[in-house]
Image (cartoon, rainbow, N blue to C red):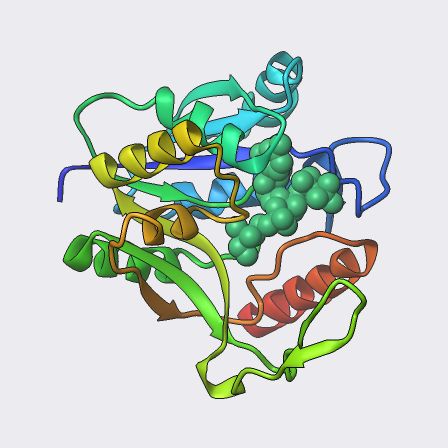
Length: 234
Ligand SMILES: Nc1ccn([C@@H]2O[C@H](COP(=O)(O)OP(=O)(O)OP(=O)(O)O)[C@@H](O)[C@H]2O)c(=O)n1
Ligand SMILES: C[C@](O)(CO)[C@H](O)COP(=O)(O)O
């Protein structure tokens, strides 16, 4: 496989976390969330470089407080994000070299991803062009109308909660983002933009541990999961 580059969108404001800083700089078991995420991606042997997308104006803070002295070797650029996750990812994509073959898009707010999981998604995307980590949903899901009245109950065995990494052939994800921008389409994940092109996307079964740190209780859960990992290693 040629050049595989990771883009980490980490430019959100973390409104649901209700912290007074970008939630990715919060400490998780003594280490910033974003540091853990970058380390996980750097440990994946298929990934040659990483592009980090941070809040506009946070670039210098990130270089001096997160990157320097941590021994990172693959971070090739730190770029400012946009108003939405989608525009932040697009800014990251625009920083990639033209000879990029595959792009691994992974939320900065998912620090518990395992390098082996990333490799499995890269392999699946190498086969069909687009793949993402996902888990079967545990709850029964309801579709509701504007008044909150239930419209339908889709069968649970066909429902998966998609996570990141989401991995794509470079040309495909560039085309998907350009088309979405031209049409004014805004999606909450990158697979949706590729699906809109009619291109198949393969889901790879992942782990419930790869949670997105979104609300304060996610931090408690992530810390407990990390402590369980340390205990298993001792
Ligand atoms: N304008 C944005 C919005 C989100 N993200 C990133 O996309 C990932 C998933 O988004 P989410 O967890 O929703 O983060 P926030 O948008 O920061 O959270 P909230 O919606 O609660 O404000 C995060 O790593 C976040 O930093 C981004 O790069 N740029
Ligand atoms: C990309 C994602 O993490 C997949 O679960 C998710 O869609 C991000 O959504 P958010 O609205 O930024 O939380």
